[in-house]
Length: 267
Image (cartoon, rainbow, N blue to C red):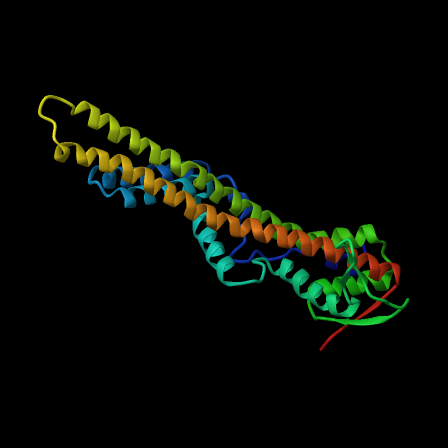
């Protein structure tokens, strides 16, 4: 394999936000963490702090699915809310390069809403940002590689970030779906306690604590479900945006190859 080809397959250092694949299955760590947080939740439930109790339940569910990666999950979620850039640098290179290709190729939409490109001359030289993806594209075009090979290289810049978004979205969605069930369990326990206390001398004051538990746990379970659903939806939106960027970039790359375009790195 030539030295230029090996640049396409160099190992990439994992960034702080990248989920460690070896920890994808939480295993025993997740199970122990869930058990510990469940016990803490039970203490708050007994003391009638239902909001905090269900909060620890939701954290326990996340620990169960992510293990020690829960910190990175929250860091990723926080970052995704306040930044428009992708979490993985390789995907951000696609985003930055595509923005310049939009200008160079004069992207437009036809009457059917499909993307079309403006006029480009055969053998034309274009200037693109200085990043590893552009350098790989420059070598591919200089060596006359076909589109299939070029698309494979571009896919390596896309897939890691896509897996991260999908991983985070799935974990948050799991908690979102589970929390109403735990809220319902609290509702059932409250109603059972209320029915057990029914007798001859029943007053509203004697039944109100059990009824309050039933209603509060239902409310808080739904509330946490909404919170985690909103967090997960941000990753789902990023997945759609990343898919669109990659598909558009692949089409632009095909145009560059077909027209034997030369790339120079902008300073």
